[in-house]
Length: 96
Image 1 (cartoon, rainbow, N blue to C red):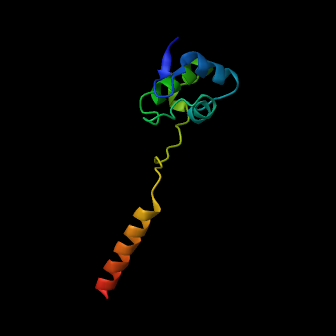
Image 2: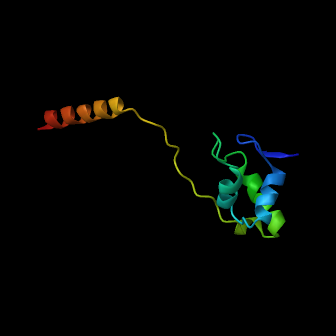
Image 3: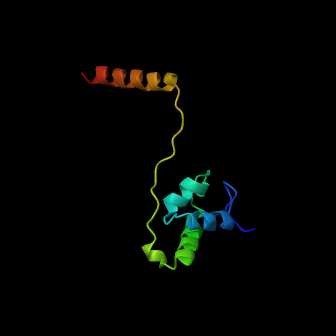
């Protein structure tokens, strides 16, 4: 068993199974088997997943649609939001 996505522990066999179920893009693989959804956000496995798709679908790698990138979200406390708002209000008051 060859692990492709170390963050999510996704094997090559799982990726191939997803392709055989109809996945043709990196985003579809991500949704089906979670490859690329770990802490590295696909930085280590994206190329490998694209190579597997290319090989299995007999499609040039250049024709593999690139994945959608989104910035990571982190929870922010209301205390922090209110502190920032108060800081901005203070700055706005000083400018007048």
